[in-house]
Length: 203
Ligand SMILES: N[C@@H](CCC(=O)N[C@@H](CS)C(=O)NCC(=O)O)C(=O)O
Image (tube, rainbow, N blue to C red; front, top):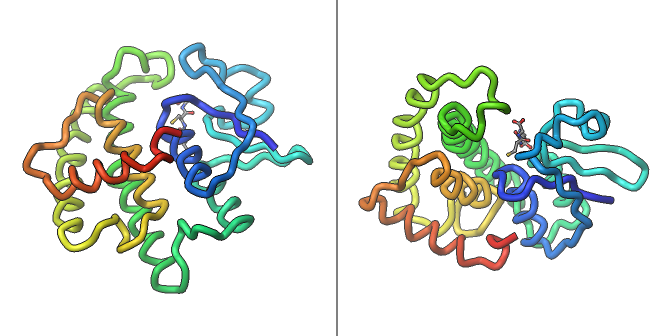
């Protein structure tokens, strides 16, 4: 089994943090996004969508989509549970993970991909107006998240879950997107400091 990885890019990082939380070590096959290695014929044979991460099993089966890869390992090794346990908790984790992907990670990604000069080759066409349109969406969502975090330590409740992993990579991805968390969002900053201090955050 091996994981096609993409360094500091947020989706491969989500998967690595998840694996670190589970204590699972996998051989990594680095894919150099800067050198457009993911657009090579060799990698297209692994993942025709030409994105990372991708997990290749020993029988050659390939699983892509960072959350699908995480779910695979959650089934193989349920402890610690990172997608929740029981109907209500599982639904809450799913709800928050989806909210953070759709309303936070994706808009930050749109800002980065459509404004950063380094993304010219990957995001074709780059649409600077789409980057601008997404900036207030990010700020609006993190203000909501800050209010949610008043009454609980983690995004989906009292336990660390995959939703916290999505949130952590989204906040960290704001930096290259040249976005900042406003100082007044104290709950968000407290939560971010806490999840960043977990050893898995360095994965
Ligand atoms: N929905 C996919 C997104 C994968 C994705 O877009 N990965 C980025 C790196 S974070 C990538 O491979 N980008 C290459 C490109 O845009 O050409 C997932 O969750 O794995």
